[in-house]
Length: 274
Image (tube, rainbow, N blue to C red; front, top):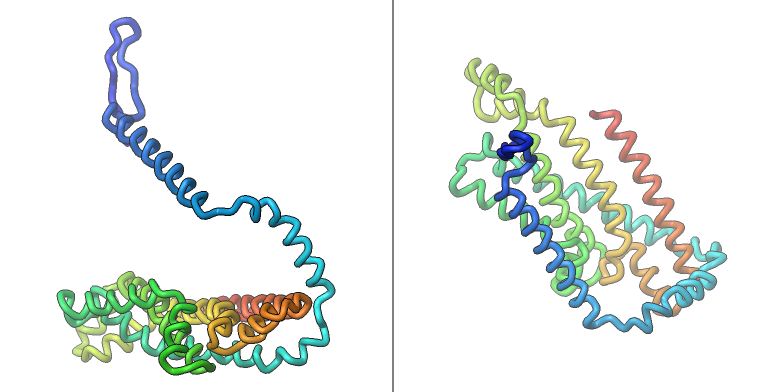
């Protein structure tokens, strides 16, 4: 912590929390934050129709009243889309993890074969995967390979690569290197060093990351059908198009129960492996 002593002939030296330069920079930062806030507020108001905003509570109450009671009889038509959603999440996670593992080893500074060429490429792949939302991936894939579950599975897989690889390569960089040196001193090959010194250290993190990503993918898979990538989103889109709000409420209930169950499974698996 830095500070200064100001001299005063009447009361003696007085300690100050910040130097004058630091205080000036702090006030400048606050000023810029206020300017940015005002600019963003004006930008938001530019295309906002406040008559609609003021009417929003009434509209929300009207739609909410149409949602209850949920169409319980509609659940029979949701089992197959729900199964498709779970398959999209599971298969997409498996694809993403399978690609993310080698990418993570290439991106980690202590396992990459080249910090000048290979590591930047691996990091670029991770950033590209993480910067594009799964819904956008699905939209692109539906346009390329057509609507259906395949587009959803690949979209979830592409989105999962960056998430899993980033967390995994950070876990690889944090390993105890003494174990690596000990195995290497026995004359082990590079593959054996990875197998006996690195993998055992990152295995708990690997399972935790994979299960956590599967849990996230369950939620993301429920909306991919809105762009034609299969799953519950297709039923949700159809119900919204026909203003069948009680069916929408039933779909929300199914999604909520599915997410709660996936959360429970994810928590139990993480407890078992970590």
